[in-house]
Image 1 (cartoon, rainbow, N blue to C red):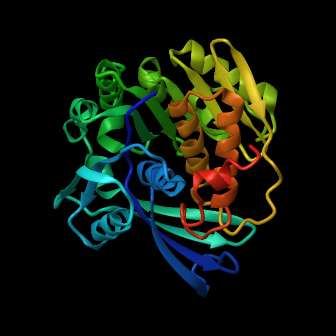
Image 2 (image 1 turned 135 degrees about the horizontal axis):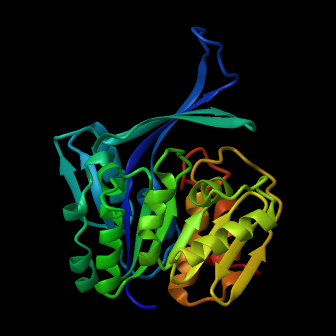
Length: 324
């Protein structure tokens, strides 16, 4: 594949609070450390690709507020090679932001304000112009956290129409999901499946999207069954499932799995799934075999785990590709 990569969808400011225990109701707990960075599927994948040092144009596409959080997003992207012509600002709502409560080595809990992510609509995503500017791959993340684009009408969504336009303009489409349960989760995903070339999701999202029971991150039988169901639902290229235990690539010609190397240091799991996604997307862009693409995804995720923000510790490709 040639051409640039568009990263569209959620733009979020993450305020990561490190705490030593979870408080009981009405109780106070001390924040020992606080780190701010940008997150969301579009931001994390774009900044991971930029950290790799890839040699293709990277286009940001979406909506932020005309506020301090919006300025934080633009400042972070200002240190990257991202083309920001399609990252629009609005005064109609605040920039989306998340307070992330992190217990090191234990868990993370998210308090999310959707802000202008919920306002993002089809007109905010000029995929035809991006294709004309040289983009060959269109990433959208996350379905079921896109407000107006997720709204169902007669079995269709705005996200599905945007993806159809991207494919009609000649771009390969990659889509990521979010672990946010809701009554319409499966229907929102199903509406887009025929317009998706590569679908990324974890085991929780695979169960939500298909209704198939998956016992946990190592349940290869359940994960493969869900992936095949999504392929039958219309995914054109491959369903790619990532869990702490494995990476699975299910295409129409068969299934490939790869187990990640043991992770020796975990500071914060924030953004690890997006780093995996960025690595595999680069493999797709370069036409690699699935096993090698999964390997790069696993290495990028492992490096992401070493930092407090979603992309702060991801190294360049030449380091990630050593002995891959």
